[in-house]
Image (cartoon, rainbow over all chains, first blue to last red; front, side, top):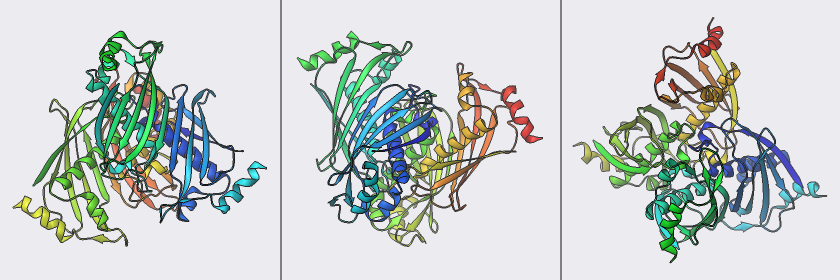
Length: 136
Length: 136
Length: 136
Length: 136
C-alpha cells in the first residue's frame, strides 16, 4: 500500500457563505494529495504529462463527514491500496482537521491516456516498477 | 418526478491545462442545476436559507463520460425522482454538450439543517407541499 | 466604441464566508463579459485561439464599490473605447446588480501573442477590420 | 516596513487551457500572502474576524510579468510599507517562481468594517500597536 499525508491551509476563497469550505473544493484538495503521493514515490505528475501521458479522472466520490472552516490546517492522506490494473488507478482519500477530526473521505478512479491520440493506455511499466516495491 | 434543465457556458477559468473542464468544477455546475430546479418549482434556495434552513451536501458522486471544452454550451438536467424522506433529499444530474453528447452524470445527497443550532431537521412541510404535486 | 452587456447569476461557490462574492471572482466575471463582447461583434474568442493567437492579460485593475450577494443577477457591461494600438487591447468593465446599483468597475489590458512562438504580435488586420466600424 | 514571504505550489485546477495559471487566481495568492503576513506579526486574520471586524478589499491591481505554470513553487512576498491611516491598509505583493523570476506584482487596499453594522472603522489601536514596532 502507498500512503502519503500532506497539508493544506483553508483559504478564504475556499469558504462559502455557509461559513464552511464549499463542497466543490474537495476534489481540488484530493488532487493536491494525489500529486504529493506521486512526488513522494519518486515520480512527478508533471513529468508523466511531459512524457505524453495524461491521467483524466473517470469517477469521483466524496463523503462529507464534518465541516472544515477558514484557516483550518487540513491533513490530506492519499492511499493507493493496490497496483493499477490495466488502464486504471484507484486513489482513496481521508481529510482530517488539526484536531484529528475526520472531515471528508473520498475516492477517484483515473486512467492513463495518450496525450496525442487520446487513446486509453495500460499503466506504463515504468510506473508499475516504481509502485511495485510498495506492495511487496 | 421533478426534472429541470438549465444552461451554462464553459468559462476559460473552468478549463485546465489538459484543455478540458477541470474535474473539480462539475460540483459547481450541479449546484447551478439544483438552484434552478428549486427556482423552477417556485422556491428560491436563497429564501430557504434566509428562513434559517441550510442544505449542506453529505454525499457526492460524479461519473466523467466525455470531456467538456472551453465555450461549450452545456445543458444541466437536474432530477428529483422521489420526495425527500426524513432529513434527506437526493438529486441526480446529467450534463450534455450542444451536440447532445453526454458529458457527465452525478448525484448529491443533501440534508436539512437548522442554521442556528446546527441540528438536522426533517424536510419542512412547506417544501414537501410544493414538491408533492410533481409526484402525483 | 463597443459596448456589450451580459448577465451572470452569482453562484454559491462564488461567495465567501463574509456572505459576499469573493473579491478574486470578479476577474472571472470580466472574462465572461470580454468573451461576450467578442461574440457580439462576430468573432469568437475560441476561434481566435484556434487560429493560433492567444490573448494573455498584462494588467488588471478592480474597484469594489458595493458587495454582490448569492443569487444576485449581475449585469456585466464591457467596453472597448478605442481601437487596439500595436499589440494591446484595453477593456473596461462595469458590473451592476438587478437594482442597477454599481457593484464593481475594472479594466484589463491584453496583448496578442503567437501561440507557437510566444512572440508578441500586432493586432491582426482581420480583427481590426471587424472592430473599425464601431469607431466610425 | 513589514515584509513576509510564503510559498504556494501551483495546483492543476489553477491552470487554464493556455497552460499557465489563470489570471484570476492571483488575487487568491495575494490573499494567502496577506494572511501569512498577519500571522507572522502575531495576529490571526481569523481572530480579527472573530472579534467582529471584517477587512473587505476596495481596490486591486495586478501586473502580469511572466507566466507561472503547473507545479511551480511560487514565493509570495507581501509588504506593508506604511502604517494604516484612518480606515485603510495598503498591501503590496511580489510573486516569484523557483528560479527567482518575477511572475506578478500587485497591490490591494483593504478597509476595516464593523461586522454587525457594516460601518467603516478606523484601524483598531490593538492592530496599530502590533504593527508600530515594524516602522520604528
